[in-house]
View 1 (spheres, rainbow, N blue to C red):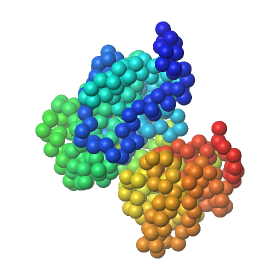
View 2 (view 1 turned 135 degrees about the horizontal axis):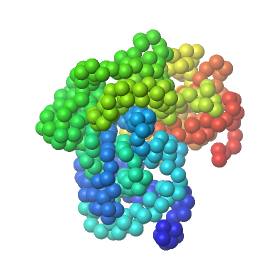
View 3 (view 1 turned 90 degrees about the vertical axis):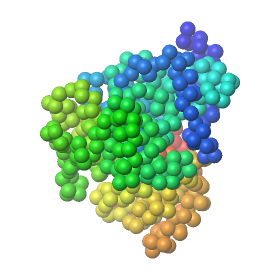
View 4 (view 1 turned 60 degrees about the horizontal axis):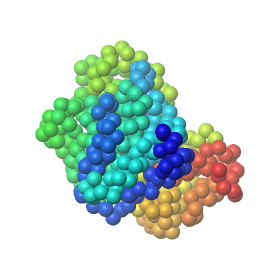
Length: 464
């Protein structure tokens, strides 16, 4: 019957499923919609049509300006180490759609996604020709796919990453066991608000009565807002610096990490991921799992020591296995760019070239201020055709930022991102490193194009 349904709607391969999802009303990629007109009724209608798969799931719901995906992946591995079967939904993907939906730490198989989308498709099409109030968006559909896949897989726990904001995000249809707010920055200001307090109010929209919220290291205005919302809805706070804290060996490059709660629980471990943000997100993940109150101290501590050293975060200070002279980092906010710049002092002490693409809605000049100071050459490109700045526009911004900061950089613009990656890598001086950053889209392209190539190769040809 499943094969007949797939045939009826023409879905038989991963490419078919991806093309269908990408062909929906895609509010993620549009910049002209009014965020505050969005509503949760479409995703509720869609999930009702699927038999409410979310009701069978135990969920940790994670919002924040940055660190959401990393927090989910640390929590995923910790819960697996504790013996749970875990589903993880994050976005966007780097190279393949199946990356968004993970079960037990691995992307789902392509046929699993095809079956889920095939089941969803007639329901989406029926709702799309109905009233606007119940017409599903692109993210409504992908969220429903995730919840359906995880329910059918019979997972014990789900890590659910918010897409945009929180209050009106499609994922906010669930009733979680724990919520988490990782960080607050000025981002998507045209949709979420122009101050950190306004953005915090949107992200705190995921808080639920009686459900504990893990709160990361927020600045005063954002923290005050989250505290106000938590008090108003009756969500117990598990707050950084108040309930728990993280510390590390201050020596550059050291991986030692410690977590301590005010009530006495503590654990130390090595982390397999470099950088201060990874230490923060590992702490938020552990605090979120602790907030479940499902495991005793000894079991949690043993699982942390066993799993955290092995965690790897794709496109977060990722040194490519196929070419260790290439560092890929999806930094696209000012804070994450600052963290990347600090990490590059250790990872690329002899210098680096930059391969850049930046979305038009980001704080481009502030991001460039963080990254240009130690860069030798800068290669700019357009990783995503609708959201990224054109290579010409980005080149102008780089030139202006370099002049303002008195940075002498050699600049070249290459519109095609795959060509830009290959040319930048082939031109890298001996002893230097290439850092591809500024965009999740560029990170995925760099991993695909350069990850399997030998150093110095790849001046021509298409990647398969």
